[in-house]
Amino acid sequence: MIGEGYPFQCSDFGDAGRVGTRTVNGVAARVFAYCEPPGRKCTFADGVKHGYVLQWNQPAPKTGTRHKRTLVTLISSKLTFAELLRVAAGLKQVP
Image 1: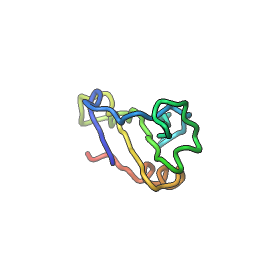
Image 2: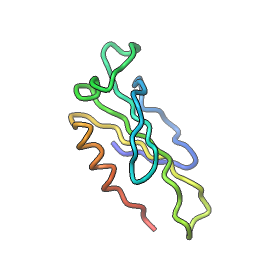
Image 3: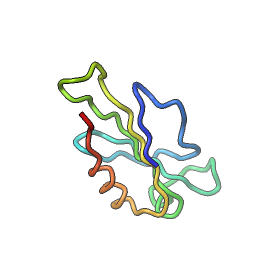
Image 4: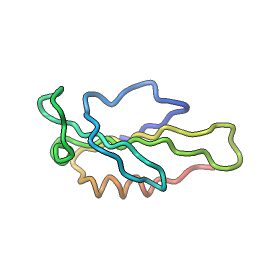
């Protein structure tokens, strides 16, 4: 699932725990993982089985918009983290 919003999204991605950061398209992204049972401290490895969330603030293009950034959220299921990063890297801004 891909979500985007400005300046923030009106929904949340559920009970996932933050497990780190990575760089996506030159921007720091927050990494979350789902785990079982919900509510316990999740680890990065939990995401392999239960899914990941990758979220970052994408800066606006230099021209053509009054917005400063867009919040992008990718929620995965049955993807490795490397595959999710490839999806993220393939996203392009629409002018």
